[in-house]
Image (cartoon, rainbow, N blue to C red):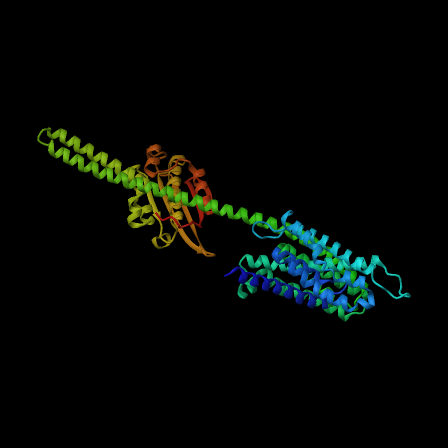
Amino acid sequence: MSKQGSGWVELFRHAAVALGYALGFVVLRQISFSHWVIFAGFRLCALLLVPYRYWPALVVGEMVPLGAIGFTHSERYGVLWSVLYAFPPIALAMPVVRWCKRSLGMFDSSGHVKVLTLLLCTLICAVLWTSVNLITLSETKLPANYPQLGYTVYAARWFIGNFLGVLTLAPLVLCVRELRANGLVSLKQVLSSSLVVEVLSVVFPSLAIFVWLCLSTDQESLRQACRMGMFLPVIWMALRHGWHGAALGGAAASVAIVLTMPERYDAGTLQAQVFMAFAITTMLLLGDRIAMLDERESRGRSDARMALALAQRNLILGEMQLRQTSDALEHVREGVQATYSQLLERLRHMLPVQDERDYRLRAAVTQQQLFRLADSLHPMVWREGGLAAALRQGAIARALDDSDIRYWCNVRDRDIDHLSNGAQVALYRSACDLIAYLCDAAHATSIRVHVRVGLRGGSRWIFLKVEGALGEATKPQVKHDDLLLRLSSSGGGLNAVEDRIALYRGQLRSRESHQGRSVSVLMHDLADDSVVI
């Protein structure tokens, strides 16, 4: 596009911004009055959300309707009044808004608003706009017999009107902006949001009841009590949803107070609006603090979940390394077998028969040791028949059988096969550690393992119980170090098991009786299956 064409497009955009702002200004000015200046909120929202390059268009959009009104009433109130009236107050707020956005950081890097800075900007702008109104009023040409003006009363009304008008609209608009940025875009998402649901089901009905009570009674004390009671939904929403809830509840409560106004300059309504302005300000600050604490807690939970998922993946990766080492040892065993066979075949005619038998026996023992080591690192039965088969007839069963310890395992294949990889690893390694612990600490002569898996609340739970019972022999002949090696146990006992099952929100209980000792473990399958073994 040529420079001339782009210039026309930019000029059209400025004209559209000026026209749109002027229309909104004129419409909102019709429903505003001295102590509820709703177009002040529209003015500040425009400065906060419109890019800097369109700010001159906003000045033009406000100066045109104000200039038209000033020109129309110039003969009645004077030329100086019409000139002052045509001056756009939005121009005074521009340096304040720019300072709050750039120097005080009203919006952080992610676009979230800082409520304290927003309230400070609102307060300064309300003071400036009230000052402009007072200056314009001071230059108004009045009839000779007109009563003396009470500038203090007008200042209070205009300040409350500007301040409450901004608090009614600006936080609401910024709240909607943040919700859209957080992904709340479609109508279905909006209606399913707990914030919107509670506004529709709690705030609106309660405020409607208060408005009805105000309009149906003639007692001013009851009216004032109902207006003050409109503060309660704002508290509820602030405590529930932070400053977002305070923004929505405050806007609704501000409109509800105006609906109960019997006349334009009602003193009771003005008092209620002063109280509501203070209430909304307080709840916005409190809600911002609550939202900050919720975000910090949410970030902490997210970090904890990430750390837990990382630990679970590390557990699976460690098991993968053990499996790779087991495969490598199995290849070494096969190589040793082939080498021994070839070597003895070539030297068969040179060796005595007895020596040949010894060498073959040593070769068989070496191969058996390599097989046991490979199987202890990662049971080969696990790869072929699953975890249930590994628990029944894998390295655990062979190690206990070689140590003359009776072993029995009760587990159902179809239940345990549905577990994630990490949960299966934690279950098997915990069983190995518990068996090694009971054989050493309780001198068990028989081991019984029970495994149960169930589904509750969308997640699976795992129950493991290992019982070590004493038989006729008080202390079986078990070499603890050899058993630890055969089971690939860490040797850390119950502490090691507790640390491992903590990755799956596990709990451990130990019970001792005259017949022996039993340890039970309850875990929840919350593992990340992004790593497959």
